[in-house]
Image (tube, rainbow over all chains, first blue to last red):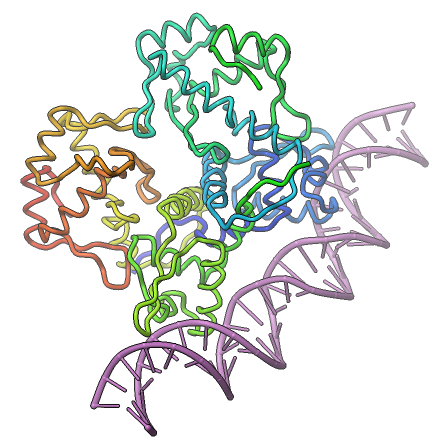
Length: 231
Length: 231
DNA sequence: CGAATGCTTCGGCCGCGGCCGAAGCATTCG
DNA sequence: CGAATGCTTCGGCCGCGGCCGAAGCATTCG
């Protein structure tokens, strides 16, 4: 019998995510941005006091990280793995018993295009992966992905810098999309594509949601550069 | 405002996994086998009545599936996605605050080699992926994986049938290992390798645990075929 | 400086859900 | 057939944890 260093248990982590208020908080942070305790209280739908308690629990378990800035406290996800675990849970949830639920245009927007930690997800991202694959700029097979030589050139022309030697983060990864049930691009490539679309002013992050909206410039940009006709 | 068909929510699924008894049940089922309600009660550490309630909740949410057989009721995970979500949560849990915990030889065995749904995980599986990659039988890059031409030949010689045209399941996938923090092989290849090692009598499934043990034949087999020296 | 803002700590309420004993139903065994 | 086995349903207990009001601390603003 030895003592080893160990983290939380599966049940501890799951029960932290399993409270509705905390799940809302974590989903609000799922796009990688840092939000203040007050903003998170709004997302969670409970009082600031209650939120404070939830945030303390999440921080104790290292699910979120804290940064003090003046009288504000900014919280963000502690690691991309947290977002990955939530995506995996969303997939399980989507396979659950089918029930009719009231839903609104906000859900529709989320399904069309949203951010997932630092890359794009939803219909847009899945379609983008398809188009890039059809043009042999990336290879998609069995859930794996790689950039071709033509792809490297194409992405460089598009303004991406993928040659960061300091980063040990995988260049090209796929991520299963809970709303589309198919893969979209993650990794450094996925993040760079998302950032570049933001920089070009093609898409804008939603204020209170992970949904992204398209600018007129983006609508023509996606059509001309990637052959994607937005709905 | 329209009504759309939707499954569970993130928080619902997470809170189902978040109860210690239910987490034990799900982990007992994580290797893909079907167990009776009584066996699961033993794993959960609660009474049969309580277990029955937990099983009903898990089945309602489609996390587990039920098969009646005489006076027994067999339960199994409803899909591999459930196991994937639990693995993702284990990774988050392993990154949690470090604490010293009592642990025993059972943990040691789990870390060395265990089943993960239908494929192998732990030190053995990570080392196996490394060796196969070093010999260029598979290509591992950025968390993606593919089988080379030499690999196809090698796996055929080893007795694997990977040419099932009916299966839409990805042939070669990787899966992040919570104990080793590195990738091992999943997908059809991972499952076939695991099954072949069982068929050859190299490894045996544990009775009350996902840990697998090695036979003398297995110890020499892994050394001769894959160049792996077991501890 | 005092007032306002952002957030947390403290205290106490309350109800959800996990728990088991007792009882009941279904199947198998002898 | 009655007894045994496997599991579930019912009922009631109990405590954990989410919740908010009140109060307090830290920072910023004017």
